[in-house]
Image (cartoon, rainbow, N blue to C red; front, top):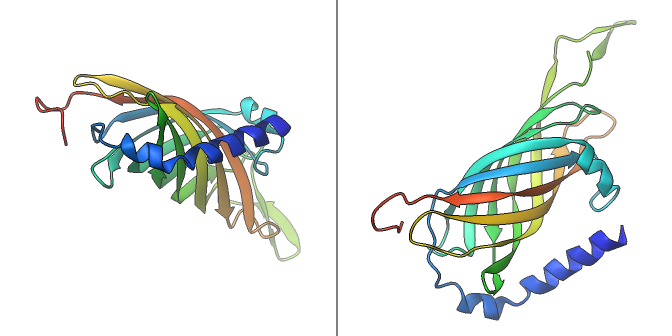
Length: 206
């Protein structure tokens, strides 16, 4: 899809404005926000058949901490419920490092990568061969290592009390041991959500 490719390269170009982003890094950051997200899942190559993502809606919850005391370099922790009747629903656990250079007026771009684990349920009763016969398998779920890589954008405007940061992103997942025919399979997530930053202490700083 041409429009998706244009968005992808625009985001990459914006992240190259690192020198401007560095001047914005003095803004305060608060660890452990509540991250709520809506996830749109698809079994597809990146930027292929994007409309199929919107047939499969899931939800996520997570948090994050700063790796350098600033808001531009953080470690994310997320649990996502993936809904997909075609290939099976699942739970995705991820931990990712995210780099977020500022663009201007509170807007930022994001590149993130990390590791994860997908626990997926078979969409129907699986079968396995025992000798010369096929029988129903007792194994209804399978676990797969995941390699998530993503890009995104959002808005961040620090406040001394509770404040909210909206975001959106696009993520590719490489899953291992999907089946014997396809040992590595790409999947994609379109993500949108909110980071809610409560006031955890009178000082409002971590």
